[in-house]
Every structure is written in structure tokens, then in C-alpha cells.
Image 1 (tube, rainbow, N blue to C red):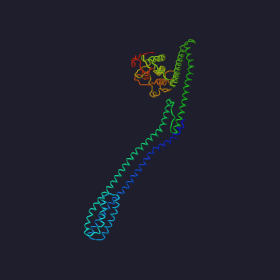
Image 2: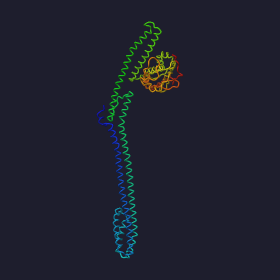
Image 3: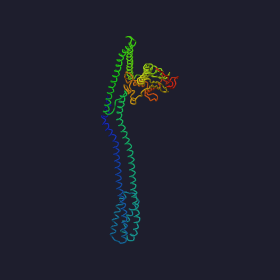
Image 4: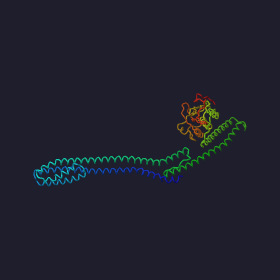
Length: 502
């Protein structure tokens, strides 16, 4: 069960973890949206204020220009028609111009045109009190007055342009800041997404490894408990329970196979011993018909004994027996196996072709002999009467390829993927009185894996059925890499083989 620390730190449920991930991942994006809104509001306010100021200042400068024109026109009209009302209008325009100029001075405090206009205003204010000759001479001051008004207007426009440039620079800075903030906050969101994805995926992968371990039969003794949401932790605990239950069932199965095989061998031994005594004539001379029945009983007993031995082999290999690697002559092992099947091969009139030796290789004698025995037995059971059986070997630098092939009906495509599964019965029917157990090829494949090799069905253009055993080069006891013996040729094929007609 999970520890207290694990229970304290894991989310209570998968839904809570998903909702928390959504909120935390969206938090940087929300901050980004808020900051972007604030920046846009700031730029909008600044642009609005600047636009208002620009309009006001431009309008004021234009008004000052109009007042200057009206003042000059009124003064010149008075010099011509000498009407007192024109002096009143002139005085009003002068006062209005002075007021607006004071406001403009706040915008341009150090502008020389405004300073010059203020001095000229003081002089033009005394214009109505001057005598006619001096009045006419003072009208020339309006030329300089108009020039300075135009200079003030241009200075106002430059000031507005500078303010617009400042706004543009501020907008660029805000944009750059938003890009940096966007990169940082989006990166933070991505990191948070990866973090929460790992928090969700990690327990799922732990469960996947646990399921694969259950399916393959391999269980890590130091496998950690699932850490994550409560639903996945509970599922991990159910898998633990299922694992223990499967281990118990596997132990019961192995015990059943051991007991069943032992119980079957005891009466079978009595049956075979009795048939042997009858065959020796202990109970009297047998008629040809009786001897034919006795031969059938003896052959069936031998077949039953072979099936029981296969069950024992399967049970032994399921306990992961370690390989006893030693240097073997593979040709000798092949002949030993063929000798056991001599009578069966003779009864089927099969021609045997086996490679010549010696061929030295480091392997497990018992596992290799059992593997070849099952392959030869399979060829005898399913091969054609009067056909051929081939055993050949190819020794490479880093591996040994040992092939067992026979003539007969090819293995169906739908059976190829299941050939090495225990208790699988293919479409091809076994020739003989007894049905096969379906574990012969499974035991052979286990014997190959025991030696870190592999057994596979290959396609050969000359042989309908061909199995290949590949064994890696095992290191010798002194630690040096060991392959073939020095007196062995690099490859032995059918041209080097000799025919055995059994």
C-alpha cells in the first residue's frame, strides 16, 4: 500500500489534478492578458491626451495668427479713416492675443519668438496714444510681429511632432515589453503543461509497465507503487492484487503439472514393463495378430511417455533454469538425437541428411538436445511418408545457425505467429494414433531463450518447413571470446553433409 507521504502529496482525484493543471497553466496567460490590457490602456490614454493637447495647441496657434492679422488690419484701417471704434476693436484683439500668448508660453517657455512677441505687444499697446506721425511709423512693427507669430506656430508644430515621436517610442517600448512578457509567460505555461502532463502520464506509464510485466511474466522485485491521482493509485493496488493472484495460480499450475506428470509416469511405467514382458514371451508365445496389437500398445506408450517428458520439460523451463554452458560437438549432439528417433524414421521411410563434424560450440547440452529432439519429433509427426529430413549448421564469427528442415505440407500462414505458444494446436493434423500436446515447439523456443538464442521458422526455397536455431558465441571460462574451434571450417552446408538412410 502507499505510504503516508505519498498519500499526503498526491492529488485526491484525477479530476482535481486536471482542473488544477488547467487553472495553473491558464494563470500565466491570464497575467499576460491583464498586462497587455494595462499596456493598451496606457497607450490609449497617452494617445488621447496627446491628441487633445495637439488639437488645442494647434488651434491656439492658429487663433494667434488670426488675431495678429486682425490687429494689423484694424491698426491700418484706423490710420486711414481715424474711427475710434477701430481702436476699441484693436484693444480687444490685443488683450485676447496677450492672454493666448501667455498660455502658449507655458508650452514653449524658452521660445525666442514668444519673448519677441511679448516685447512687441508692449510696444503695440502704446500705439493708440501715439501722434499720427509716430503711429504711421509704428505700423512697420507688424511685419516683425507677423514673422514672430509664424515662428511661434512652427515651434508649436515641432513641439507636437516631438510629443508624437515620444508617444511612438513609448509604444515601441510597450510592444517590446509585451513580447518579452509573452515569451516568458508562454514558456512558463508550457513548462507547467509539461509538468502536469508528466504528473498525469507517469502513473499511466507505471500502470502500463505493470500490465506488460504481468503479461510477459516478468515482475520487478523492486517495483515502486503508483504515485498520482487516487483513481490510478487504486488501479495500481488492484494490479498488485491481480499479480499476487496470478502468481498463486501459476504456482498451482506448476504444482499440478508436476503431480500429474509424476502420477502418469508411475502407471505408464507398469504398462510399458508389462508390454515388454509380453514381447519377451514371458506369458507364452504370441500370435502375429497379438504381436501387432502389442507393438501398437508399446508405440502408444512410448508416445505417451514422450508427451509426459515434454510436460516435465515445460514445467522445468517455466522455473527459469539457468543454462550450464559447456563446449559441445554439435554434430555429436545431432546424431544422439537422431539415434533416439531411429525406429520412427525407419517406419516413415524418411531419408536423413545431417552435417558432418566436428563442430565445436559453447552451449547447454541438455537444452540443445531437448530442442533438437522436439524439432525432429515434430518433423517425424508432420512430415510426409518417404520424405526427407535435413539438419545443417552454419558457424559464423559471432553466432551459430542450426537448421532442421523436412519435406511435407508447409505450415499455414495463420499458424506461423502462434507456433511457439504453449498448448497451441495448428491446422495441420499429426500423423499417428495420439494427438500432440502443443507444447513441443514452446519447449524448444524456451530452450533457445535459455541460451540467449532464438528459434524461428524461416522460408527456404528448397524445404517446405525449416526451423532455424541461432545461438550467440558464449565467452569461455577464462573470459576470452570463444567462437569455433580452430580446426572447424567457417561454414558447413548441405555439400559437406552425408546422407543417412535409416
